[in-house]
Amino acid sequence: MTENRDKKRLLIIEDDLGLQKQLRWTFDQYAVSVASDRESALAMVRRHEPSVITMDLGLPPDQDGATEGLATLKQILALAPDTKIIVLTGNQDHANALKAIEIGAYDFQQKPFDPEMLKLVVQRAFYLHAIQQENKRLNLTQSSSPIDGLITKDAELLKACRNIEKVAPSDVTVMLLGESGTGKEVLARALHNLSNRKDRRFVAINCAAIPETLLESELFGHEKGAFTGAAKQTPGKIELADGGTFFLDEVGDLPFQLQAKLLRFLQERVIERIGGREEIPVDVRIVCATHQNLNELMKQGQFREDLYYRLSEIVISIPPLRKRIGDAILLAHHFKNKFCAKEGKGTMNFSQEALAAIEKNQWAGNVREIENCIKRAVIMAEDSIITPQDLGLQAGNNDNDMELLNLKTLREQEECKAVIKALARVDGNVAHAAKLLGVSRPTLYDLMNRCGLK
Image (tube, rainbow, N blue to C red):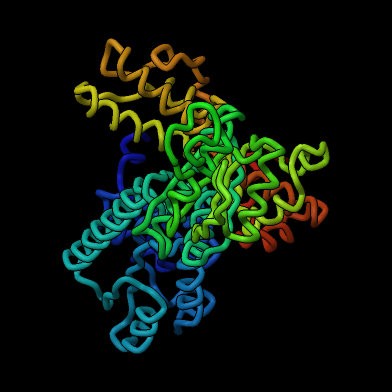
């Protein structure tokens, strides 16, 4: 049983019993399944997902033609487009063989076939299929993010990246919404780097990190003698960003009295330094970000509604890490490799329990939290295997997690759901349910037995 499971899977679609026997003998080094008609062939494809198929175009009820065979070929390729299908045809059936190639068959061989030649073609088909699957796996390990510094496979975050690409060339004001640590500044820098202002300065200020008494001076600058300690004229951050991009981080923490002054700048595009009387024109693109609910702050009278609408010409939301499926593991591997190289630790790997724990954790601090967690684990781990204890996380239930990732288990679960739904729709009529599911009655009975249905 185990030996057969390790063999490459080959499906033979042939209604002639003599040829079935000959093909089984020819390909005894593979895990061979046999189907004699369209329904059983499709059932085998769904169940075993063979890498390579040999098929006769003359299938019942059209053994003397190719209509049924070509229809079966189309359906198989719709179900499993990567499968390599080798068509077996008669000597006088060259036109249909070419049709099969046009539909998507990998190759064709004429009957009576040369066993050694057919074995070579099948072997080459398995090799090509393996290469294509490996290329797919390699592509999946690389970030699809179009933005430097952002590692993700999450559809929502990739959509946000595409939106960044769309709006970057314009001067529209962009608001980035997301929890702390989700990468708002990375996206803000991407907006700048993809814009026509990329050769000018990107200036950032965090409204929550600067005391309220100093924030106005940081934003707008001051003249010499404007207040105690103002020993010289100092331009503000907005002025320094002239010609470039000004990133206003945590804008929800901007003091209410400064909101009016920022609004005036957004309307007039001029600033006045503290203690100054001169209006200074500034050409700058504004990008802002916050983790706060600005709608709630507006209701509470803590954030100006007119300022909100000036800042939110385009709003882009960034999903938290806990909602980005698969990204926690992707980031964990990235940070592990990064800090191993930085700390001179050599090759380190995560235990399966550690990976389960990483997936299970909610990561309230998002990417910033997971980066710090992995950095600490790389430094503190005493072995080359990083454990949940090294991460400071509770061990995940690895057996259950791995079971959920087992494709065969998931497929069987979904098959059972489909069988139950089909039987319910037709009030338990097996023949009608089989037709609805696109399988034969014997196949449906087999599925019912595996699902524990009677």
